Structure formats: C-alpha cells, structure tokens
Length: 195
Image (cartoon, rainbow, N blue to C red; front, side, top):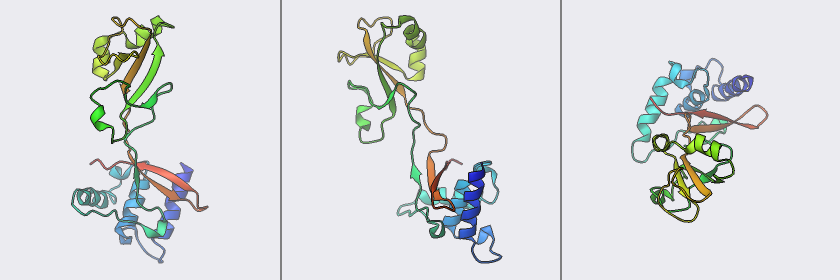
C-alpha cells in the first residue's frame, strides 16, 4: 500500500510541478494516469476521477483515438491483459483437437489446458470432472488425447490420457500503467474502464 502512495505522490509532484497547481489543472493524460493509479478506492469511487475517465471511455469509441499521455510521468500508454494466468498444472492455449476456439487463434488464447492421466487417481478425477452438467455449465471439456475431436464425458472415456480444457479466468482490472517510482523502477497499477 505504501508503494502506491509514494508512486501517486511522485506522479502528482511531476504532473503538478508549478506551485499552487491543482489536480483539475493537470493535463488530461495526467488526470487519467492519476485516476488509473487510484486503488483504494478505484477511480470509480473518486468523484474527481469520474469525469476524465468517462471522457476517455467515450473518446476511445471514436475513430482516430489517440491515448492521452502524461509526459511528465514517463509512463506512456497503458497495456492491457484480458486474462489471468491459468491455475497451477494448466497452460495457456487451445485444445489440441479442433473446436470452437480455432477461429480465435489470432487472438490471445482464452483457454487453460491440461493433459492428465485420469486413471492414476480416478476418484480425484471423478470428483473434479465427473459431473457432465457441471462441466458444461463451467465450460469445461474433457477430450481423449488420441485425437478424437468429440467432447467426451468423464464416465464414457475409454482411454486414460485426456485433455482438460477450461475457460481462462478474465481479469477484473484488465488495463495497466507501468509508472516509474522515485527511483525510476516501474511499478504496475491495474485498472478497468467499465462504467
């Protein structure tokens, strides 16, 4: 929490260098950067931040949008990562066999995939993936690793080696700024642009 306060204080000092300057006098890019760095509460809970952030969201929908930059802070444009990391034991990717994700291969993979031997610990496998209705609700597919492209149920699969594919968790805060602190080390601040 302290590092956030130091980063915000350092950013404010850079953005509002002239004596007596106020937050509302900052450039739009610096207003956005300050608001995006607000964590507790997020920019949604800071009355000063709502107008510049809503202005940003509106501007992003227009053709020719250029991200407003706070040059004093040397943070540049934000990055975006839509997905969290996959759970332990899973890797980011697509299922090996063809499925509905094939048309999205030019985008960031939206699945977490694990190949496992369901026979090694059948009780654990059944507890996690044995309920077909729950798998369907959660978007989980169980496929044979032999290349069978049809989704298999845990109970009907005859082979031991199967591929489990689950939806990759989405980030709540999917945008970030890497803001240099007073020592020049960049710190990452996550935020979202939902109203």
